[in-house]
Each structure stands twice: as structure tokens, then as C-alpha cells.
Image 1 (cartoon, one colour):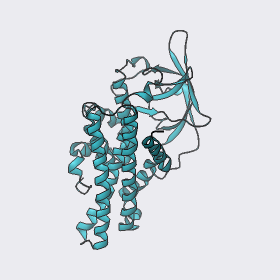
Image 2 (cartoon, helix red, strand yellow):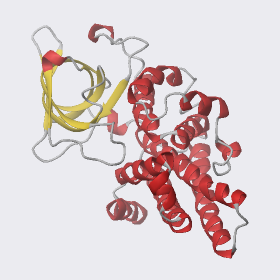
Image 3 (cartoon, rainbow, N blue to C red):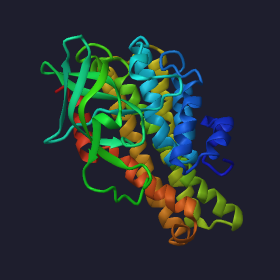
Image 4 (cartoon, helix red, strand yellow):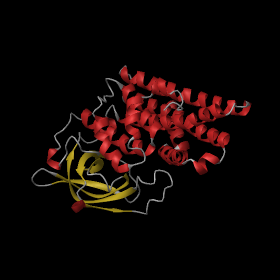
Amino acid sequence: MESCWQFTEWGDDDLARRVQQVAADVDASIRFAPSVSGDSLDWQQDPWHILRTLATLGAVDLTAARTIEPHLDAITILTQAGSPDLSAIGVTDDTVWGVYAAGGPGHGLVATQTADGHFELSGTKPWCSLGDRLDHALVTAAQDGHQRLFAVRLDPDHYTTEGPPWQAVGLPDLRTVTLRLDSAEAIPVGESGWYLSRPGFAWGGIGVAAVWFGAAAALAGRLRDAAEKREPDQVALVAIGHCDRALYAALLALRHASDQIAGGQVEGTAASLLAARTRAVVVDAVEQVITVVGHALGPAPLAYDPEHARRVADLTLYIRQHHAERDLAALGRMVVGG
């Protein structure tokens, strides 16, 4: 990762070498995920370790990062929930998780409790990345009119996939589907409403921003590569300066978020505000880097360098998890206290 922007300041060399072995391979990334979740990831004890882990994943390969990030999020959620016993639905130390909490018009999961006290989920859940390739997931479902989190076994006998075919140029192998569950066995994780109100909900959004940052830093590294091959002119130096300014601001935002979490200062509305600000700063930096690098390097790497072209396409899709002006409006609403 020598050419990645300031990697030595925030990256994990050992993890980068390990992730490189599974880059652009979804199945290998799934198998690799449990080894990352065993690396002492604890938001309250060492949030910077988590953020640098996620940034490193993003810098190496977004297919691996997009596969592993929700698994790490699930592990932290289960830890915060007191590590419930999920062996009844086949969970082991090697289980790799998805986290599916999105909703949408015409979709919804409903949890019902059976006569023997067990829970079953039925209905549809949209936007399930790798929903047809993972064995277990944490999903939100309605129970008695309230949203609750459940661990569910994705047993082929109790689910089907539907929705339009995945056509994305970015992250093409991380097919996102709508899951239709039919009496799927599930175990509640936390009480009703706990998932959204828990201290770590907003922290997970900051973690995704760290992945975006890492990928943008790798893109900016291509400008350093070009400068080493040919003496940069003034325009090339301006491009490097633009990227450095944007990424430095993003890195400061992530470090500040880490310090605030470590200091126990971000719960409730303060956590939501911190996450919204951090994500806004990072996504702005990412979009600047994509544009500046594209202007500076022209079409050649997009046409002839598969790793670079894949990273640009993957990152362009991935950052659309940030809802642009709508998320900025939500940030503004928090700032004015509405």
C-alpha cells in the first residue's frame, strides 16, 4: 500500500497483506471475515482500531470490504446485546453475518411468537446484499407494532429471493436481493426498539464512512504513482493538493469521532449528530477525490487498468448509501434542533 495516501498514518499493513489474498473474490472474502472479527474489535475500548481496520479494508478492495463490514457490524451488535446464545439456529464461531435493516414501500417483515415461545419471521426485506449467499443475518421486523432486531437462519426451505436482476457495474458480484421469508426461525436480539436506540447504532454509520475514506485514499495514491513516473506540472500538483486537503479533513473527522466515542461522549442525539457530520465530511472528500483523480489521469486508467476502474465503479456505487442532499437536510435539522 505504498502509494495509498498517507497509509502509514492510519492503515494496518498486516491486515492489508491478508486482505489482498481475497481481493475481488466474494466467496474468499466470506471465508475470511471471521478472522477479522476475531481481532479484538470493541467500539468502546478501542474505536480507532475498528475505524483503521475498516479503512484498510476499503483501501485494499471494496468487494472484500463490502462483504466484511456488515459482518463486523453484526459482531459488535451481538456483543452489545450481551452475546445471546444463538446455537439453536445453527450459529457458530465461523458464522458470517449480513445486517438487513432497510425498508421500503410494499415491504415488511413481521415476527410472530409460536405457542412454544419461539419466533418466526414472514414477509419481505429489500436491499439484502449477499442475501442469497449467507447462512445467517440480523434483520429488523415488526412485533406488536414496534421494530425489533432478530437473528435469523437463512434456511433455503424458508426463504426465496425476488426483485429485479442486479445490474450494477460497481460491486457486480455483491448481488443485492429482496428476501421473502416464510416462517423462518429467528431469535430476538435486544428488546423492541433497542437496535435503533443502542449506543452503537450511529457508530456503525461512521464505520462505513471509514471504508469510503480508505478507498478514496487508494484512488489518490494513483496521483502519487503518476508523479513518480513523470515530473508533475503545476496542474498535477494542484490535483494532489486538492486530494490531500480533502482526505486530511476526512481523516481528522474520523479521528475526532474515534476520540469522542472513546471518551464516552456520544450517545443518543449526540451520536446521531456526530455520525451525520462525519459521514458528510467523508463523502464530500470521496466525491472530490473521484472527480479530481479522473480529471488528472484522464481515461487511460479507467480503460486499461482493471483494479483502478473497478475501484472507481465500486466506490461510486458504495457512497450512494449516503443520501446526498437528503442526509445534509437531516444534518441541518439536527443542527437547528428540530
